[in-house]
Length: 373
Image 1 (cartoon, rainbow, N blue to C red):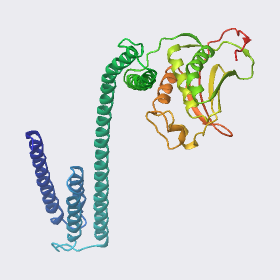
Image 2: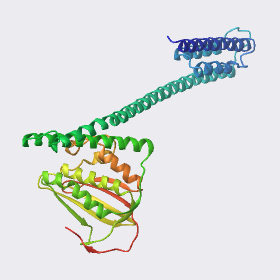
Image 3: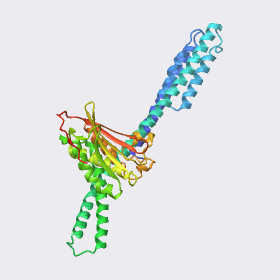
Image 4: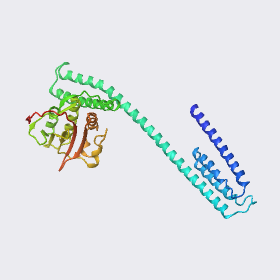
């Protein structure tokens, strides 16, 4: 046993021995007062101090129970011992009331002691969980940082091989290199997302705000996801709620971060759409906010899962969560909330889901042009 723990144990033992002797001394004083006076003079109430001392000093429950029982017996025995004074009904009633008060005090002291022990256990569990969470986050942060450098080196090497810098390559070799390149880039994207999530949690999200047009950002995000949509035979459309004319949806925001949100939501919708399905990106304005909705025709989401979709690492039981890491939506929530906006999801009738967010609008004179298809 470490010296510090042994010293603490010795100190605890000494403290308990002092409490034991203090209780014994208190009992002796009360016995002398109680048994040397007539029964109507009830000094048994003073035993309450001993019972409270036993419970508040965290002696064992058995010790508290024993002290309470002994105090009750001594209080009642004074009616018959030493027997020099007559016992009246009032004295008997007072003794019973005192005994009841001692029992209630012992019971309450025991309850309080148990509550304190339960609170202490919960505090220790919370401290252990917090320490474990901190260790886990430090580990993930360090791991992702250390993974990024070799991944970048591997990607650059694959690029050099694909460009023939180390000699001619055959079509089958180029196909294999392309597969490896996509795999490494996907892994690098995951590492970057992990680093961003943990950096945002630790330091907050730093925004480079400027005037940005949501419809322009939506068009750029759709262009980035077009290849993925084509491979899954999913059609992408962009429209404005209640209008066929293009207008500006200007917000004071970080364009790069909003582009990530739009790309995440659109790619998420594509990944969970059926072949031949359609993903709609709809922009609208209401009550000083600009709103973006991404609608798909996939398997939909369960109502009980809706509040959990934007939690970190959440992996639901439905088909929608079968792909992905549970970080894209969490990062999107971080970005939208950092802009003073709100992000949410809801089931779509008769089939599919809607992921949407809204941001405060920058009021400008509307510019109407035909909306590009």
